[in-house]
Image (tube, rainbow over the protein chains, first blue to last red):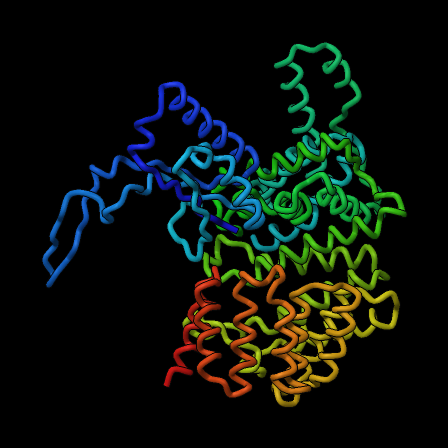
Length: 122
Length: 407
């Protein structure tokens, strides 16, 4: 079963982390990637650029209108994700708890099942 | 070409069995056989199949194994490994005639070793016993090779770390270990049966693969009722495959299926298997599920289905292998025999259990509420089930049901 583990980041929270904590976060992700690759559970992971670099496209009457900035007005933005293929939901929840973001105050990892997919190079 | 492929996949486990019995080192043997199979599929397509295909594969695989051990030895510069090489020979004698079937069984037991996680058991069975390539297995599960490759390697590491040997488990453990093998084959079948997308040309049919493996296992232990039961269950379920989806890929529930498209040969074979198995106690869950499937498959339509018999079989199943999914199915049969209200009462028992978050409970409840004539409540439950399912064809089906009740 595939699950998307969504990292809802608050850029302000991440920026406030000390250098040591930043390093710990990076190391934690590297270790998580290595472990899930070895176990054959990681499909793909990607981190997203800062929401300030986002643009939203809306087509109205056939005319595209582009606005800079993120779609949602919020403190948290999608910062990245892990797509995992695991045996069941419990395993997905267990792995979510191993992602360093889950242990950071004011952050959490959302676990959501995949329903349809296409396009992965298999 | 198809013939070569089939031939290779039949020979693969036999050659691997022979090699593993001779040299131990299951993981290295498995790699060597995979390489030999790949070499054969290329070479035989051009040069034709050799006179002794099994001997050819065994020789090539042994050479690969020796090469592997040699390069390993060179890499580590360990003299003792090099010395051990003296014991290897590329002139493999013709394997004993009787060993093929037993080897496949020992391989299944090894791949389904309890030290291996279930997802890895499935992958390893498909590769080592089913003879599929890592790329094919990855495609079957819709994951990249980069995900599937390590999963298979890890399974082999787990087997090595557990010190598992290539042999049949001792008699006291055998039925417990056989249950794991059956569960793995069941998982493979379900994965294939519920799959709805993917390019058929590159994506192997896991339901067909599971049936092939179950047939092989049944050939090894013809007197085991549960093995026969599982094979029968697969055949009786697969018989309905063509009727199960409509032209647009939408799900067609059992009650609405065009039963003239059911595969009567598969039904006859499955029914005969399960009938014979049921006469030999002890009864097991696969035999009972197959018996239930046989009752469905024999009926001309839902109204002429022997629901009292199905309700009875589910009651026995619920007794010997209690499980909320069984209770859920039993509730449908009870609703058909004693009325929707009785079925709905049975569902209430499941509200605090492990199914409480799943889509199946509201889906069945919706169905029974619809039968009871409570359209508004049924619609509500169909929508709830639609939100919960992780399958898009199922979601479409549930939404369509809800929409039909809206008017």
